[in-house]
Image (cartoon, rainbow, N blue to C red):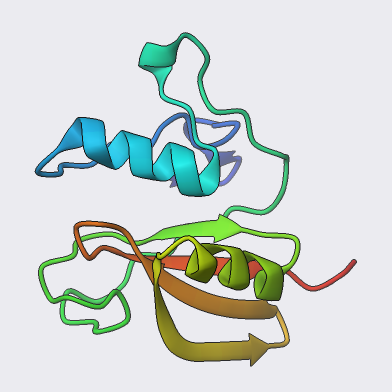
Length: 126
């Protein structure tokens, strides 16, 4: 709820990402191996660099996320999209052939082991 003074609750950022999967242990290992994301159960939550976070609801019938039953899509900021795609491809990660260059950055897409589409975003140099 907002009022003339701004939001009713101020937040300082995303505190966690939680999602369902068929094999949580294997999925945690995949995200750790390919993106360096540690799990809370390992004693240290993932620490990320400060930067922009986009929060954008999409229409229920969007095809932007890939599969029709994929309810969310992760977007990871990367400093060099070409290097990221190359390294992930070399590691056997499924890479989408599409790319996008926009005024607000460069984009590429990859897929996790359960076929969830993940967006990689290289924001424009400031």
